[in-house]
Length: 285
Image (cartoon, rainbow, N blue to C red):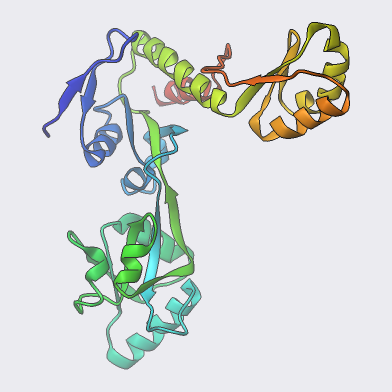
């Protein structure tokens, strides 16, 4: 497939290819790419044994979408997968035909329906606007990806209450069957250290107070440090979720002034994700 190339500043020797999300998923699954950013929904569609061929390294927080099972809004008594099972039985008995499910996500649809014990259906593979299949008379149900549900609703469809198959987002993903050299693993180590440091920084804040009040201040925030924060000289690195409670505790102890800053990066010496990846790669050799 066609694509463009790029470079990563500070990571010499890394070849970057700009491909479609589908091509990235296929390349990772085939071991043709070492690393890629693509949607989890596309990776899961590669097969139930996907986890034996790729490893999700980090959820990136964008490209969020849900893979859902939907039914016509006019089916007033149908809200769950159990209801679909009952309707499927009745439809087969009445018409001699199984319910038709329009979807591009055949693998995940079959697995999800099997987990819910739904058998009286058949897949109608869709390559176009899947949500329009019921209105066109091509299917009774739709399994599709959605971000807000607005397009599905506009086509007269509702999401089943237990019909969320996958809450997908973009994932930094490594291939377990690609040929990894020591140099490539070192490049990945550097890349992951930056990605993880940026992710940690987004969840942390540094509080700083006067040196002469350090003993009092450290005692005031000790419970927050114990929850996963860390002490600093005349300060503490704490979770942003604890920021206002910690500030209140410091104010209650008479510590002032207290300033807050947000780090750009927070590096650690080890990467559990990389340790796990290297262990799994050794298992695949």
